[in-house]
Length: 619
Image (cartoon, rainbow, N blue to C red; front, side, top):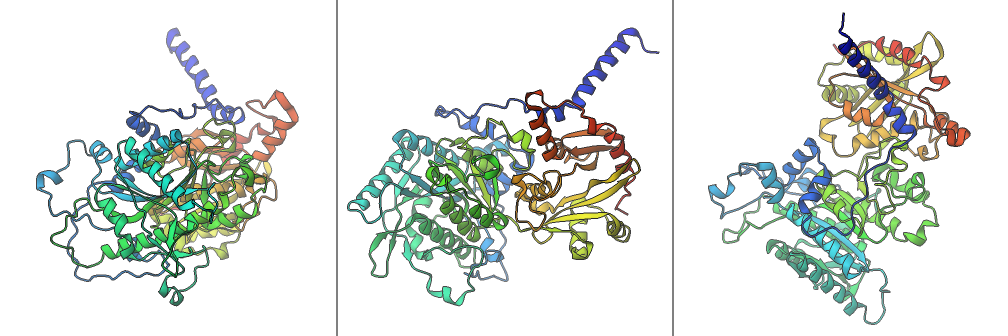
């Protein structure tokens, strides 16, 4: 028997639990206020504050340290591999990182500090490059803000190679060369004012036309090659600046067939640099012997880690967000559809969005698979730091649309993150599933042995569809589970898995968005995506799944589900069909939705009964 005070406390706690139970539903149907957008006029000493605002997870921190941290000494190679110059960047020789060769470091210098995370962030050992398109014109104040962001990135180990463009300078006009050089010097001055060292590289680095040996290579089918090329020897000026600790700033000039320096499209310059710098980095990583008299202590990996397009327009507008920018783009599966659905009215405010979208696809085709591109307004310099550390969009694109709508972080200046991504396909019959690859994916992701016979025998009867990312690097399996108290089957997410090697590279978000479009998001205009599924046609259904109570991924599920309920050692999650909620909200106008609607009564008990009867797929 509880004492009166204890009973009263227990009753109050139950009341709080009841309220918390529906907190997720309430927040989805009436989105709460969010944090304010970044102050545009940040002080000069906000570097640490910008790091804290990035809010990196443990995985983000480990990934950052793996990229920029202390490099272990590499053993001498016995079987050297000569890199290829083919366009296929999946070649392992091109993806290799150049070793950090330092001949003047003592043991004391290499010894890590007592706080490796802090020292690695504030004083990185291994520096990488970023290609930056500075698409102006910008005022002096805007340039100062951009330069401050470049300096912050340099402190974190990412050194920019900047190509300056001015959209107001018409190509071929008298005085365009002197005007562009003046823009170069303005950028250099802004960088040096913020404490960086910068060098104008006014000599032509890029050559017009295809590379001489390109005729012998297969034509790329998934991107448009640049109308220019670079030889490794052409990068001497850029390499010299980087080794001297200076940020190279280039004009969009190229040598034509008559050896004249002419102004060309800056996108061709950036595309040529992306390919040339990757090939030069691969050559540096080959078995060529370094110069014993050269100082490589300030050397840098030329292969670009990021492509940054800084302009006055911001990201690529999205029809799903009423012209507000896309958050994350899977270029492999979304590029053509974004181009086809681009509203002509957007061209007035964002005339270069599609050109920059194609630029990102071209550059990322040459850059390492872990690379990404970001299209950002000059008003959001702090977002560059968050992108570098987390390699994620400002807000996850896989969050429920109710949480994205009204979010004050989402403005017309919100950056767009672009990745090479993976093709997405929807399979609706078990015969179309590659069981061997699926087995490997599930067993590697869950680290358990699959009971293949029982698992696939069950799928023969219950399978609704399977969403597959790439070559089975990720998959979502949805089944139809029967319920004795309902004639309609329950849409059940049986498995959701991504290979560990692809966790953190955007595949999880791409996969969940495709799952959304085929299940609880079906029927909405923003679910019309060319992934081989229903392409937005049909009625959405509530999606249900279960997860172990101690599953570390549950935090991610909490953020994306409409609600959850604990069932002993399990947690039941669900996502409400969005079209039905939207229609009901519109019908009621300002009345809004209640915590529990009529059609929602008793559904939790039906779901709980169904999901607890699903047999284990593991041995």
